[in-house]
Amino acid sequence: MRVVIVGDALGHNNELDKLSLTEPLSESLESRMSSHPAKATTSTPDRRRRRYPRYRCDFSVVVTLLAGKNYQKLNAHCKDLSEAGIGAIVAAELASGEVVSLSFSLPGSIELWDVKAVLRHRRGYHYGFEFLSLAAERIEVLKAFIQNRDRAD
Image 1 (cartoon, rainbow, N blue to C red):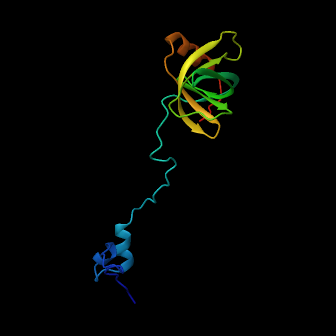
Image 2 (cartoon, rainbow, N blue to C red):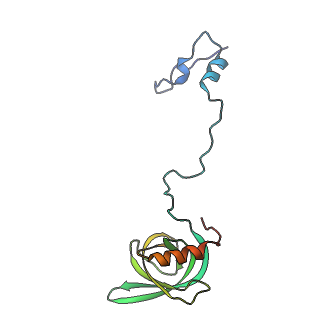
Image 3 (cartoon, rainbow, N blue to C red):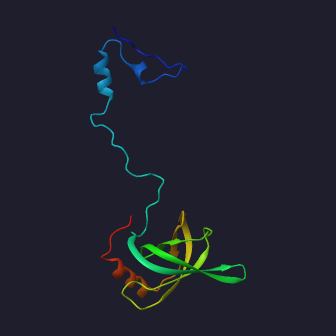
């Protein structure tokens, strides 16, 4: 017995209604199917790619922000670093787009960095800051520092 579907319950035609009544059903379906099964996608299509990879880090950071008429200093902890920004754990509520000052020393260095950054991302208490303006020599120091670190993304 052979069944040919002409439409669904709403009256919409589908590919099956175009099957020839003279050719066997299995041959007609096989000719319309791909010989290669579809692969599942591994990435979310709407997720933007990062411009720079992140690397695991572990050092203290001081976040300074303008709170009303005063500056507020918050202790934070760096979890990842890239040429363009830093991911840190901050036990406070910060607003996206907020401009802050970040003070830190890279492990193995005594040089104190004081960098302006903008808050771009938040997940819980993990905040992603983008550096606003780094001198070329600072970027080179960051590249050298992260070169042998494990990737965080």
